[in-house]
Image 1 (tube, one colour):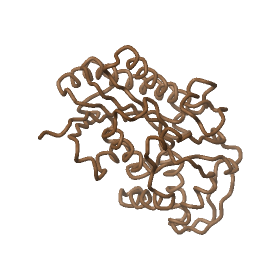
Image 2: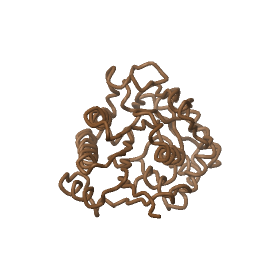
Image 3: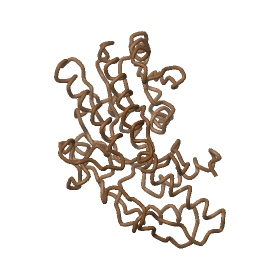
Image 4: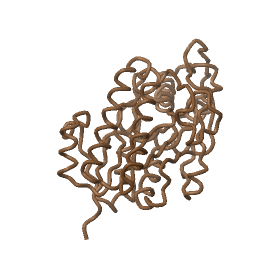
Length: 310
């Protein structure tokens, strides 16, 4: 009996690779073209690929991603590229009659001043965080497009997961492209091998962030594909609790074995003070992440060492 065929966009990214290496991935036939094999910013090519493949479902995880520095430096690219990716994949799936699509969004879609925890109904209810506004707008666009398609064509079920911040294996660790935890791993490791006495932290370290291990998101995605009918149309995926920036640095130092001192640079931007998603729908759906912070950082650090980032 043939396995259900799923088109996975972004199969070379952190989320995509964690999905493909998940122990449960063998239940499906994943088709995950590289950007050289399929340029998702080309609608004609995307439409033809989708029509030829005729997948039973699509998981859209492709995106132009980066940390706060990259978002500030390249807002046009983060907006336009991600809008193009979402539009092309979702509309090509609709045109090909693909009945199930899982769109992976981002918690940066939530307003910067919204009360925490952030419920799914808060999208578009306030001003976005300026440091990643372009990326957030693109993710809102794709999410709304899925909702509009559901409304117009009830036979199509296009749903969106809103993960909290992620880290883990296959992450980007270079300072120009990394998010918080891989950046911390890189900085603390460099301090260890360089015998540095101090590591700097942007801001006072009190800002709070919710970071989930990417392997746990992969688990949620595969659970969603098995339980698609019961999955809410829009659902946060997260821990249900957060940590301060200082706590992430302390956890990384413990895992890596660096015993120096942290100093705070309060002239640097820190983004939102807190960003914690409401996991009420997730709990009702019956799924929770399994990886504790130190365990996840340990796995990410070992990947960092093996991948010769050090």
